[in-house]
Amino acid sequence: MELEIRKSGIREWILDLFFPNVCPVCRRVMRWDLYCCEDCVKELEPIGEKQEKLLCPRCGKYVCVCAERGIRYDRCIAAGIYEGAVRKAVLSFKYDSNSNAAEIFACICAKRIEKAGIPADIITYVPMSARKRRMRGYNQAELFAEALSEKTGIPVRHGLLSRVYSVEEQHERTASERIESARREYSAAEGAELSGERVILCDDVLTTGATMSSCAGILKDIGASEVTAVVCAGTL
Ligand SMILES: [Zn+2]
Ligand SMILES: [Zn+2]
Image (cartoon, rainbow, N blue to C red):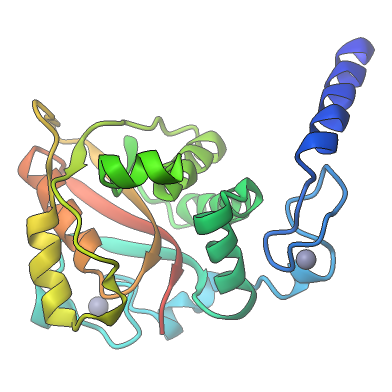
């Protein structure tokens, strides 16, 4: 037992020489066994119980869009609000594959899922186009789903959804343009089928909810009985 601990310590220590453990918020090198440095962890405030006051628990939006947009997921859990330290952590997760961020957000969401007693059989994630995934080398929504699976014990189901094509990044488009393109961008993966599973659908950030809604709708069309959207952060 003792030997195993030392072995893993040496392994971590060697890994740390080649891949220094970096804080996902301030990007300073920190002790190998931390997810976030001690200064930044104070700023990484999870919204927890406050979510109901900040974001609609159903659509996950600051200004509820449940009625007007026919949101197809059943509820939304966000670890934080997309600003300040949370935003920095999401960005370093998205562009620098800082896995510490995935771990932090997964810990926060796992606690909320457990506390709220949200029923779920499988976890899946919003897919990236094959081309983009090749270029980036990973899909951050998938990494988040895997970290969440590790914390909750709920298995990840890969290959349910596919991204048919990819239009340019969503930043400069209006809400209705996003909804329309999200509808065309995703589809069920070939042969994907569900039989009444309750699904947790992961993504990094919820902006309009169009992507989540489109993917949740597809999951329901192939047999999911309910879909809970779980994201690292929601926008105000
Ligand atoms: Zn830091
Ligand atoms: Zn709502």
